[in-house]
Length: 212
Image (cartoon, rainbow, N blue to C red; front, side, top):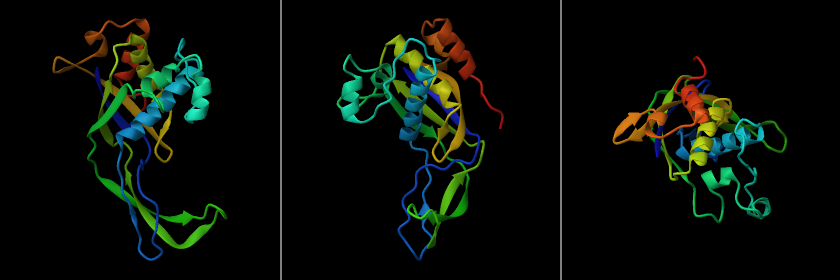
């Protein structure tokens, strides 16, 4: 099943970029919104939804290290790991692609901070490209499973993502545009049979949560 979502940043958004390596030039951290960044935040949001009791009846181990995952999964993988994958598994059941994200940016000049002393490093200025608040990005989110429980958990991850942060502490909103069905974009509950919980999530997600 393919979901189409639009993500809109509420504050200045910076993602990606590389380390500063020059003491003379002013390097540029290249901007982007990698699909992996959205997927990572969705995974975190799913864990939060479970642990905060919003997504009832689901499990989340909250682990990423293989050693601890083995212990946490002694009785089988948790629902979040079943959905998003984990080391040694057959792979994630969620695939994310950016389909539209071209937008004007502005630049900020910043100074590098020494991790040890917490002070500015002389001669280490760098600039970052930043998306202005209100920039919209469209993603396709493929759910490679027919499991209705995992579909519902994915919806919860989208809902909680709207109260979470992306990239360098940026707030974002998310709107569910629909799912692809027979080549057309239709509401989720038109394409599949939804229970009351999924219907409520669909209704909440079809509108922006925050005003820009």
